[in-house]
Image (tube, rainbow, N blue to C red; front, side, top):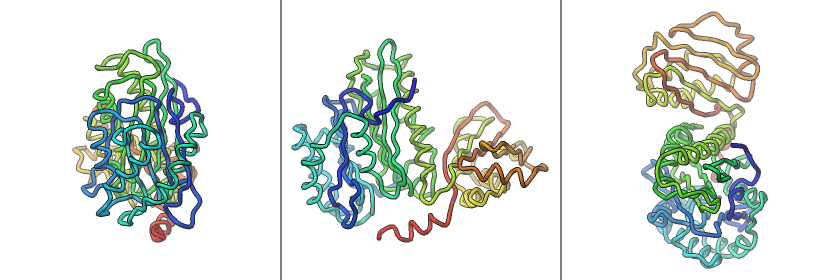
Length: 406
């Protein structure tokens, strides 16, 4: 497996585009994105656990109920959530795209991101659709423009693609993502679109995605707020030509590994670009009695506002790590916990057997001043492990969210 250029256009038969259509007055950034396969695809998706859900989620669920889709359409600047006509607008968007592409509107995954509770005008989308379809491009620039079009408070675009083998067949899988704030385990204001030319049945594609998110997108937290619009959608068009994956086995494992490579990269990218963030935090828990305990501990630590603030200040306050473990609800022996902080500047052990140990505050400061920080926790209770990703809590986060609607 190796990383290749192209994002969502790396897989055979996919084109993408992003344009500015003017959903939010006063800006010129891309706000409408489209990804299209030249042939129908197996489709799978997972969604937010928030009871308040954006209208596009209901429409997408209905559209891919048969396990098929051919395109993915997304707007930014408006979440189309908590609007009386939300589903009607989402369906109109699909109808506009379907008409322009010559495909069924029911074969389109639809998503929106941005401000909640504001009516989404259809006129800019209708006016911008011809230009969007005309801009479709199968080169890396197509993925690049689509990635830009789904951004809200993101400061960088997020995309990746990898090349991998299924048996003797060379396959590709790529993805783009948006996510910066309202990021919390069980998905967040996070949209992820993945394409692959591997041949896999809708059932096995859904299985692979549902299993993967347990250790990737559900292990991110920026601010503890679970959003209303999160969607991770995957289209697989089969143009690589491998025998269709219809059951578990070596081919399924190869596909799942490639999917995980893409999703883990996007997870780190989302966490690192958390609103106002200056540091990426990676919490790795080892020695857990079972997988769920490992996940629970890692997520609890990464979600701790006190720990996030300490990391912003480069303060090796390991007590905040133990505190977060203690209220996590996980069944752990707190007298066996070891904690270390690490970065490219080195590693400092700060806690052993649930108690503090002597360490150099100056060395710890050097370690925690870096941009990428590892929080390493050993529970000494078994062989299971888990990783969660987050970021520090800065003054800028409050500023961004205090001004968000304007």
